[in-house]
Image 1 (cartoon, rainbow, N blue to C red):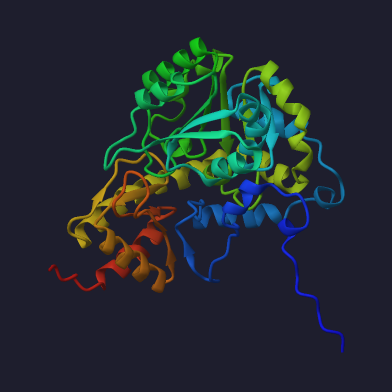
Image 2: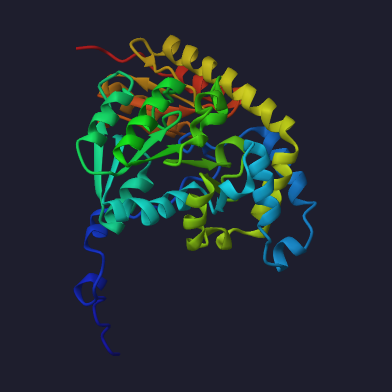
Length: 372
């Protein structure tokens, strides 16, 4: 029998992107039956039933034919009150981020963003070679827009990213703060990207963005994963002035969208009541989780949030203890210990009141930790 030649690492014999090797491979894996409260999906029973019903009604054409994206783009434009020429559909917000990074950030060479932030921005920086100029979140305090503006103005024209509300803490910036950032960036010759994937859960929602669409240096990235239960369908959109969309459309991202995803998106936008009701329960569940955790875990404090989750501050070891206990109870959450702004902490999604009850039931059974 011929001995097998040891497998070579690709980077040992072929040119590769050197910086990418420093990243951890990413895959979405969790135990079957586990309640995933880490990814902040809209895991609401009524939404699941609605999608199950719609999937059973899809015509064979949604599988055997390539999609025409025009009707879906028109539906998204109507949803946001925009002209269709100002909308570009993408296969999820991840791809929208990749598109913006390749088309705008890489040529500029620098991205200004708060840290922590969504992982895709970091991966794009490694892959495309631009500078990730991040501003650390202050300890147990909200991020000031002025800190981001100061960092932006300290260098050449660049791209500034603001997540509205923040994807780690749920912090919502005011309309005045966003306008201040956009105005400063415009004078600087910079672009502002506003990620609104969680905005559907904010009390003020679209009011915080009013008037910003008039600026030619503003792009909005929006996902329908959180707001309409379409995480598995992978569909999102970029909204900007028509000339910007015309430029971005040359990457042809809508060609990667599936017909099934677009059909579900159109139907979801046409029947808003089920999602509006689900999101209202999410907001109620958000408040219930904050109360329940702080009652069950002395010393824990909930951050003010306008997203579909609650971020908690806690001692490092206690956060790890609770994270581990929830995982043992079949509940997956995001441990925040050690990231900028948190000495210890946990982020827990609130997709329904029943999900929150599962969390508080596990916490009720925890022994009180001993203090030395």
